[in-house]
Image (cartoon, rainbow, N blue to C red; front, side, top):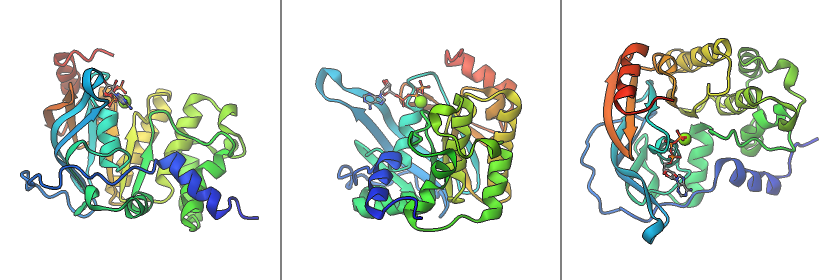
Length: 280
Ligand SMILES: Nc1ncnc2c1ncn2[C@@H]1O[C@H](COP(=O)(O)OP(=O)(O)OP(=O)(O)O)[C@@H](O)[C@H]1O
Ligand SMILES: [Mg+2]
């Protein structure tokens, strides 16, 4: 029995991944960073994102040029409201840039039609939302398989089994989100992002609701995605230990990049965070 009709699937794609709009702005802005992100990486060039207008305007990102290098694990840190989720949403093509450019590989997202942007997201990007964005009417199994259902492809059973085992979801597959704890929902969201083995995985605080042991296993899974499968991972976290698993850390404050740290250790990350007033 087909899980979903095609039409319903298209609606759901809009729901879980966001349709986004091809950004019209900024086509004239010159690419000045020149840094290559590689086919499997991503980068922004003078990216600015303003929500709202007039007195209500919030400059969530202010002239951010950053590279998420191919086959690297990049952590994104900074105080609450610094623009971390906004950056991930813009790079993943879920939000339009107000100005500036975003590249996934060599593809500039603002140059794509909505249709091609949706396809790029589906084929190349996995996203773990801070708020999970699971579909309440679907079981854990169907939530995990949703990207493949939408794309009309089938999972690699061995890989699916591995993801389910590592994320300890074996006995939860027939449950709906309301019947699961926050940590279990977070793991389902992570499984959904990993199951297609996308080129780039964006994970917004993927260990925020997990106990330390499960969190460590999730971080190992992300590390292995980079080292063994050649994926590119960008992860938002408030946890210096989690950031210690990354190859580099990008620090944001008030919508701007204030530092980049290579080969981070939890102690150095903690020191830097204190300097930014992030004491959470
Ligand atoms: N859809 C929106 N409409 C208006 N303002 C928004 C919207 N999304 C985010 N913002 C604002 O943009 C700024 C950056 O928000 P963002 O969610 O990117 O922060 P964050 O660094 O992810 O914070 P946290 O650590 O709390 O998740 C905040 O001031 C926030 O209130
Ligand atoms: Mg956030």
